[in-house]
Image 1 (cartoon, rainbow, N blue to C red):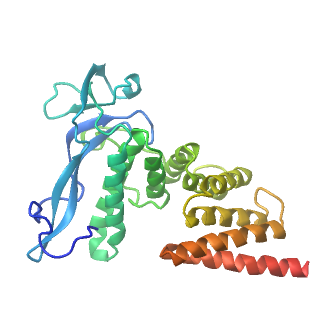
Image 2 (cartoon, helix red, strand yellow; image 1 turned 90 degrees about the vertical axis):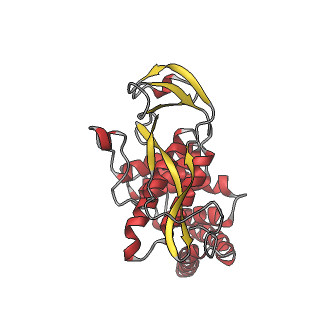
Image 3 (cartoon, rainbow, N blue to C red; image 1 turned 60 degrees about the horizontal axis):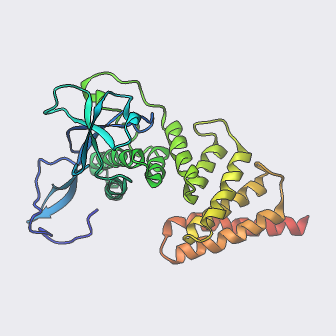
Length: 318
């Protein structure tokens, strides 16, 4: 949600009742990755605006805002990787054919797409009333498209955020497949668990600590794959090693997962002392996170505290 209050927060913003949350144009961008591609639209970036007591939306930008454009040899769908000059695109309103002879270089690392995707995701999370269900879904649909743009341009955090969209099925199965959703036929996307697994795998391979433990979760739970407890534990350990200098909820969350593995003998032997060690680390990290205002980790902190007591009791009885 926007963080402004009161009517007409900026003079150039006005509440329009005919601007939808999910708002895209006739410019289409090619990506080869099966999760991201094949084609994504230009997005008009919209925000909720209240003016004179009337709620509406206004456009503040578009993504991508094509400023740096290079001419390239004509390319078709599935050939995006044949150019290194940027992201091939075509304008369905003015181009004569479906091939791309231009490439966009306006957001080479996908940072802008990541920012706008996060804006929509946060807005969607704020819609909890049943009457806002449609707007909530549209926000998550917009976030998915923008995160796919970000990941397609090489931003590993785009992959991480995309993994959360799929892992929690934020769009309730209604994901953007391609240009052909509206104008033809396209092969169906894999199920959400497969897409989440792949998205988190990309983030883990980029050495993002949170991506490592989320990828480990998928392996541990057998979501999108066969369960792999040893592989999951490897990912949890890697997440802890990579995240030791990051915010406490990162290394605390990784430590909690390692503790569970030793407590439940998943990917390793049952070891109460080792589990206790990791539960204590998890408790410290998660307590720091909760004290710093991250209330979403309350339940994880309680789990870590209970784990400490359970392992202490087992060691006494053993």
